[in-house]
Image (tube, rainbow, N blue to C red):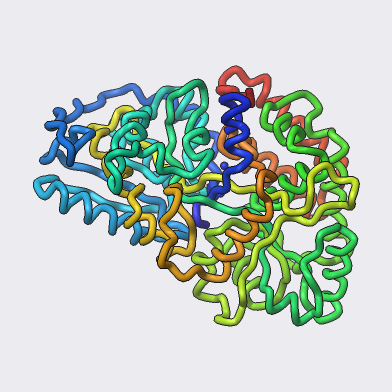
Length: 482
């Protein structure tokens, strides 16, 4: 996955309005519950931090020019070349510094022991199926506040602070309690229902705006031997990429806020029941690709690009991640989820978009200044353009597309954001409560329902129970929309 990550209205009405207008990228993924306790214990034997360097116009963060820097990148749908290219810029700017660069798909397994020992790397792309729980990291004060980076002059225009070059909502997404910014979401992800425009046109169909129309399109596809839907059955927390904004469309964005806030009976809202029943109907009518519950994200995407299924819930990274199996004439497109009917609270076009690919600088890193400087380089126009052109996704940098020929999926994503306007939602449960969202709601609830092992009523009861447990768990840091 791109960021099997993928995830800030907490900071007040003004900031919430900013986020409504924001559109962002990425995916988050599942930590095991063991991380909740294991990561929390990281107070042993931290090595001393490197000395500060000399602050200059070219070195506003006072990076120690000869200090080593260690970077660990999640090797997912975006690959690692974009980060290696940015590393090369750092090495050019600080030729005396030795930079260690590595990548992994097992972020938690590789880095959890180092957090526990107090010897984490200087910069981490905390993404993928083994993403470390952000809420835990923040709650246990294991991350550096990135405010110095945000207040530093930008690479391209020293008269502008880095924060002033970012897309709306990006800074707020990195906040959990108050003003400190703990996470820099580098990608800008559009979540929704992805499909081949060519395949849709071959059925003489247009994208369905209501659920009756969705079922009609699926019925038409089934007659041609094509499944209506598939999804990452082994990672069913992909289903919310289209289900959550559908819930908001039907019941209003306040329904998602209540779910994020772990409010009592939030999952029992009529809009949730309506949308669960709609998705369950896909299973009951045989519109889900056979064997989907046993497929991982790559296998489901491959079946989809091979034309075995019409629709898949996913994020912007899919264009890059599925490129190897996607036919040249696939004509990739994304759309907002279908609603129920004209009684929905929000208009068609309501979509989930938010920051993805979360970068963090550990509090106990030896070279925190270097980690932030590497992010400052990545947030330049040149690095942003390099990312967008090579991995087909937008970045947090507000621009970086001039002169780039947008790919079909990226062009479609931009169009979807324009159509959405202010009707962009950003559920925070996937980064406030990672384990709850991925392991329990996703695998234990939605995955079981879509496989036919739970009815919608049973799934809602089970998920509400999971949410209530999390709300009452004093070992979990709790967050709320303000």
